[in-house]
Image 1 (cartoon, rainbow, N blue to C red):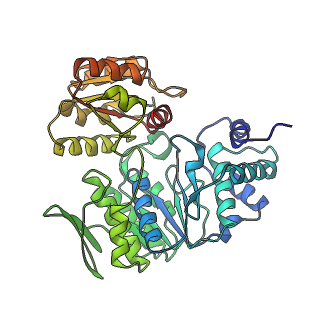
Image 2: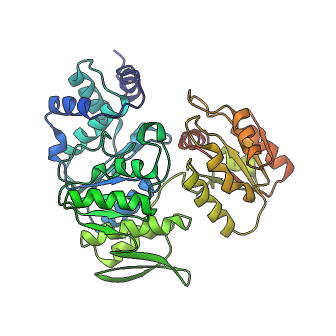
Length: 424
């Protein structure tokens, strides 16, 4: 008999519910109850929501906790190259055998009921976490917060809301206030909430929700401050000042993500030297990641090759700001996006930094924006744009014209994941 694999179980799970995203917690409560409610047996939970910076902030929190000797469970989504990346058990990516076992157990307990792929795989992660000792559990929200499948822990140790911006309007609302309300749905009664930089409309909503729940708020610019000074990062709160190196994750926005992570670590009484490790040793792929090896890098020869999975207007602005600070070098974009995104809003800030954009369709993604449409949108914001059938062919055209250029592959985490698999 052929041994079952996690991929086989995941494929079966895709057929359990016709909608990819369907926000409600009823199906989660039903399956969790059938599994013995593993969400009630987790190590202290830090629950992280927001539009941008969730993954980076989680990575820095984990780096600080692990530097201090703590064992940490971590749940994130989507994955880039392999599903296993979503579930880190006591510091290690979940093994193939353990993943297959918990997925199969959840599939059996569900008894063919209606449930989304994200919901049932979240149940599998919680089940795995509940069975392995650790000191902390980091849960990253998939979408929104209030009705997200991760929002099933009654009393987390802390909640975190990273910067909120316009994204996923079809699910979360058309205004910044509505979207902030969904993110603030993770706030729990009397549980401290760390809040990253927010626009006034979003912060007003978050503060109102926190007040209703009597949840202490530790907000950027109020209870904690962070910024750059003399090429370093300076963080300050009521416990004092930290003078630290700049984060190893690139971009000015990572200063703010680091600040939120430090606010969490300080709440947990993590020592200063481990706070420094949080910002200097965190790793998070596809966030302005320099590719240094692999077939694509070999094909690029003397070019710089970068990868980023940001996909909304705020991400476009952050990437543009970083490109503006990098050593001068002719920059080209290879871009693929989903058809649910604000492509004009994403590309507009990048237009001033790119000599040319090559659009691609995202392989294997039904919701990809066709390459020709991406190129058309790029031209609409003033970019010189063309399209290519693959990333490899786009890169070949760029290198043929400019062997020493800077190439940024961008626009979607799904494209980034495809690139990492192809480049491995």
